Length: 383
Image 1 (cartoon, rainbow, N blue to C red):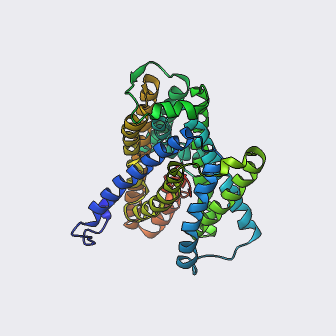
Image 2 (tube, rainbow, N blue to C red; image 1 turned 45 degrees about the vertical axis):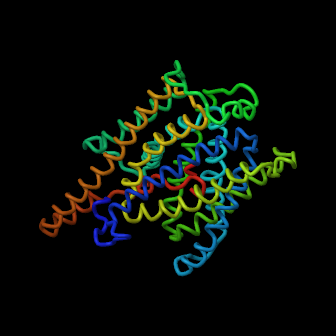
Image 3 (cartoon, one colour; image 1 turned 90 degrees about the horizontal axis):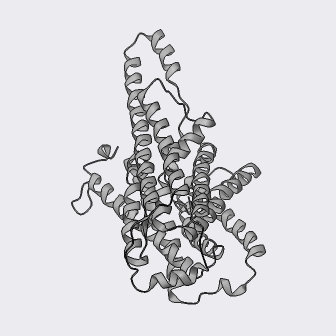
């Protein structure tokens, strides 16, 4: 869909198509940095409840002004029904999503956290199909590709969870960060449990995408929906922290590094990256954006290897390959489905009126929740 971008729109002599590719590469570097920064925050001992509270407060402060001024005309009246829906979206897309992510990251590594996230489009498709939001046509190759891709993602996630395997590559940590990781880790970590948490993170993220689709139909103001979701996410985390984080010292900043990790998570991952991704989805389409997701995993692997001395295990590598292969099968299936439906509609247009009406009725399919597969986890929480 990037090919459809206007070649005439140039910035500094760069056509829009090239701008999209540059923006997506920059986006993957920004998200990759978030994975590593989040791990550093955990290694420094930042509370897994305090970190998302501060992060979402920053994101909320960034989103509210834009939502208020840009969507004045599009924003429907707020009702109790919408409040309940926003609360549930926050529970799924912010609280469970980010909570499971941090628990999983604490027990595994940035690279494998990023690798498992590649399964989100496939899980979203499976959820949408189960709820009959997405139509599965096994008599067409695009339907088979989506099902096979989903199974490959499930298989990859299972391999990462159940089989760690021998160390394939284990560089020495730089800047003494490996020692910091051991201090911040607070003892032995459970790899399998961490992978289960990350799967919970992906399920929450996918559930948020599926649930968000009908809400946006009734409340067509994306920034406002995200702002309300973020607001309720902060409230939910504060309530949980009130019971589980009794140490007042956990809410204080003890170093400039801690401040940097929270500011990066709030401003870059939840602010700048969100704006860039919205623009890329609008101009290039959701499939174009999703295709770049594996680049993030590669960048995370390089960053984590250089800064954290991360080790790579055979099970994780096999699982990541299966998940990425499954991702591209699902995306290819979605692309083929759109092309097939477009051809069928074009054919229906040249049919006699009566036959065209009958064929058009058969071609009607419910909108897919995977048309927006990868919004930002925090305000959407890529992570």
